[in-house]
Image (cartoon, rainbow, N blue to C red; front, side, top):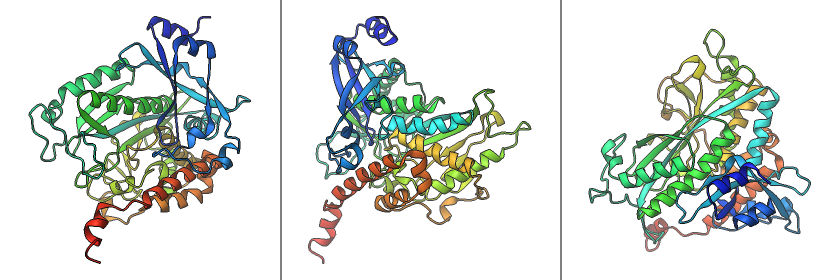
Length: 445
């Protein structure tokens, strides 16, 4: 029987299909099936507990979240996400799947379903959110010893970058073969990538996506991370999406631009008919200001994430907002009324894109729903203000678990499970004795 998926696989002469889901960390989990088995099965079954894996492969006690019998869930392919895997040696496709219970209801722990849950709240009001992510990442030299610091890679000049090369065309051109293949892969993968720039750090790049529907953008970011890493390996280097990979270099962010359209008219609800900002615009900002500090594990999910959030290195320390003010956690770019939008500069690039976008929109939704009031715009440096964000992952987990409005919007069961995953990661990290401790405490205390 013909279907969009069947037609795609036939047209592209696909031999195998990567059936994937994003877990809570944003890592792709799933199975690789032969084409015929994929078509005949029509679904994938894997344990629901797979969603609860930590970044280092552990799981918390999953009984409270999935049941004591560790049951399967049913994963249904989303035909809108099917793509050719451009780096595969033979014709291979990848399809992102939706996680369902046996009765067909969505699995509440699945990140795609968390984002859908938030988008449904906007749909109930006749609104359509629009987002555009900006993703920073580092190219680094390959190394096998995790105890050694990372270094910029060697480019075509035969030298590593020795200083800051912000917006340098020549520094980008130093890795032309990598970027030419990455561009080709992104086009074949239908990722909708737009701008490429060299960011401030040595070997740090930024790629911007065209704006669009949040679930589609989250899918594209999810696939893009893997595409960048695979391309880098083909060129003998690593690409990393750590928030703070090098001690003396700036961190990497995933800034999220967002606006909201009236689904019927296409009008930007952040602007009134006379072109001035609407009350909903300020309510949305107020929601971000109120709830970003209480949902930081979604924007800074690892212990490393909090090393990025320091003043004077292109990262925010609070949730002040300002017009075209890059020191603020919430920036409003200069634009026409039809393009009025809000940029959340808090998330690191290490986030799960589905959860970061869901939480970002949840914060704004709560601000609109409860008619919260934003502070006055910041016209000077927000870095001179006080630190309003949690300093450590442990504090952030406690704050999110205690935030009832966020639990309500994202789902109580999901928030509890996510916090359990993060707590296990933190406990594992806390057992590590760092090189700093050995260097300064071994023979001196």
